[in-house]
Image (cartoon, rainbow, N blue to C red; front, side, top):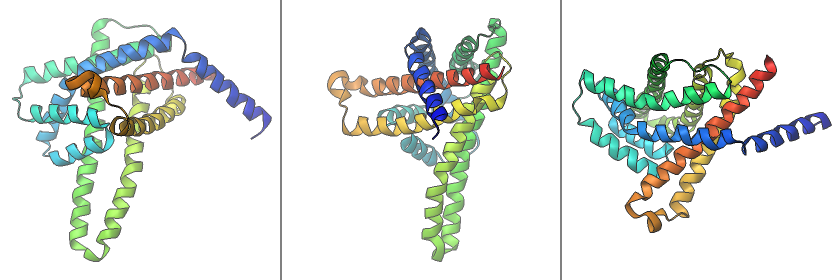
Length: 273
């Protein structure tokens, strides 16, 4: 690494450390995480409805949640998902659930527009955009779960018909599914970073922040999950609320990293102008 590269890296690190102490980073993550928590149950209701209509294997959905979410968070989401599967579905329910769940994407639009110094649009236009963003995100999440479900069924079929290669098939699938999940998370974050602000943003300017957010999300979720299981004893202090506390801390941290990644994109976007 050249001296110029070292200085540039040092400057970037120093700038990001200073950014972490700004009022922006103390307000926006909390705002986003609050509305994400409010949106969880309506979002799960919609997902349960879509997954049931598509005849996805609910066991695979449960396995997906267990594998990719911290322990306490997974318990809450699986419990809510199981309760919503048997619920009645009508047009009023769908509209209400979309409106409530869109509070999360609405807060992201407002926060990202503020970061990019854009103009906030009127309430109706912002709400419509929030619902459209939510539908896009739902499509990506369902595609991810559906791909894993179909992939699992395909692997089982290949394993049953090719007993000789069964161990190799399962090994390849267990290895390849993680890069696939990584790519889908990265793509989802990139879509949000691109379409959320009320500013025209070239897609290439969000790659750095999206990659940073994806890597830190995955690593920190793994670390936090291990910490919750092996070290933390939230139940000692919070009792039956311990899983809720785990959920709140996890979502706040993801929101914090999300905003930090967005500010990285804004800096690159500004330099391109």
